[in-house]
Length: 240
Image (cartoon, rainbow, N blue to C red; front, side, top):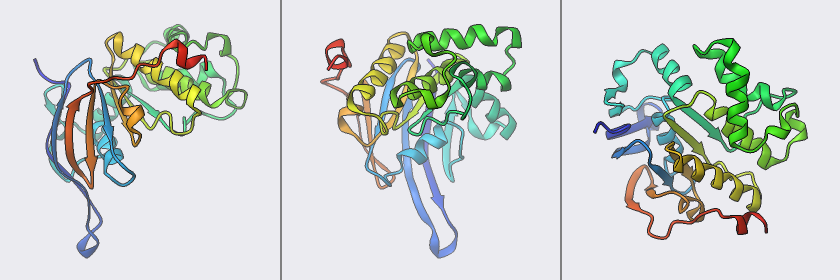
């Protein structure tokens, strides 16, 4: 089986001359379709740089990245943009919702840049919103939503094109514990339904909601292991 993601000896170096700063130092791993993987490390460890490369938001300085068996180097920038829109979904700590725009229109946004027929946009957006249990908030704009609801809208937006992989960059970082638990439950439920999830976090308790943790420090992968005591965001936690 061809892995969904494969990186080999990937390096990322910023700056020039004497100001060179290595962010990734020859990292390698494989992620298969349907996995839930957490990339965990402290601030400055290189985890966000790694996510940007995996999400085609940046290119490595050295090494190889294969997505569905095809090297990143074989794609043009326009092709990478098309894959980002159609096959990848992104969730960020700061939500990145459009102001003065309601939930439905925020979730529709990726469809504007897709080949999906406009007549299908509303149905697809409503389906994604239903998955995060916000159908009762369709016409609410960003200012009328709680932090947890904003992140759930961001998840729906990431889902609307039915991507092969969802990248979540510190998705609970701006949330209280209850809202964070709701978000992690949604991500776990999506993974149970077959979605590939790649989560970036600095928190061990959040990483343990995944099935596998890749631990990184100073741009080097220190550990890649299965989670032996996986946390599940259950109803009892959400009702506290």
